Image (tube, rainbow, N blue to C red; front, top):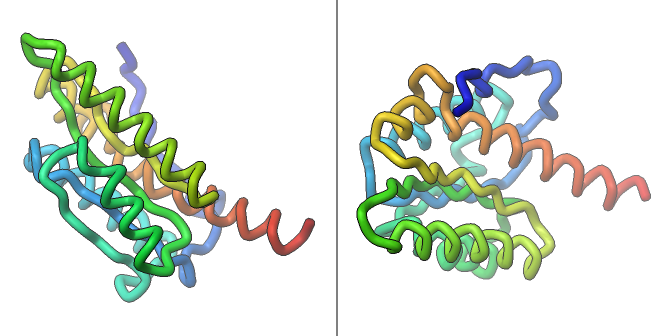
Length: 164
C-alpha cells in the first residue's frame, strides 16, 4: 500500500493552462469522495491558470457512465481533453471488477478514438477509508493528480502538433 502523498507539485513545472479547454466528468456515486476529487481538480486547474469559462463540468450517475460522457464532450464541445473523476469501492460481489474494467477500458477507448487526452481519475479502492485517504486525506487527492496530468498531456499534444 502506498503511503506517499503524490499530490504535491511545483507549479513552475506545470504548463500554463490559461487557454486550455478542459472537460470534467464527475460520478455522483460515492459523492463524498467524488466531490473532494472535483474540488482538488478545480483548485489545481485554477492555480495553473485555467479559467471557469474554459471548463465544462458534467455529472453522471456512476463511474460506468464516465466514458460515455467523455465521448459526449468530445463530440459536442471543443474540449482539448477530459478528466474523468469517480470512485468504485470493492463490495462482496464481482460487480467491482466489472465496473472498474469497463470504466478503465472505456476511458482509454475514448482517448484513442478522439486522439485527445482522457484522464483516468477514478479511485478503485477496497474500503471507504482508502478512498478518503486518496481524495484529500493522508495520501493526497487524485483530483489534483488528474488535473496536472490533463494539463501536461494537452500541452504535450500542442507542442508536438505545433513544432513537429
